[in-house]
Image (cartoon, rainbow, N blue to C red; front, side, top):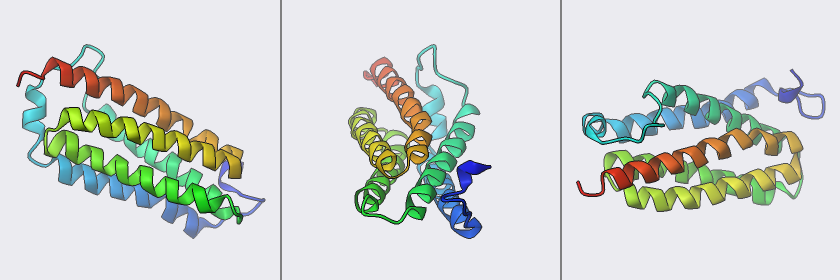
Length: 165
């Protein structure tokens, strides 16, 4: 698997760490933000294109894994591009985690929509910066961009369908 090798080398411990941090962080954030919020969420009117709840953990685990792999590749390439790329990655990951609290825990769906728009911009900028350092890393961020665009539409539609509540 060449995608896990950078310059022909594989650092298994570093790879595991950079992949597991967003997965575990996302799991903890999801658990904290969704705790006691699912009953209320189930009662919301949702658009026809809303996927079943079982899709979300699968999608997010995959996306967190891909973004962790992308970060691993960028970190493995020592260079000045990392000075922009890694901080952008950290910002978008923080915004990602914040969205769950805004949307589920605090029920601020309109605020979550605005925050997700900022998140999408941060992800796009991260992907661009990653691509400047390592083309594969930038490309690994594309599914994440696509999913967040879909989630943005889902967030907007759910908010509009329930804005009277």
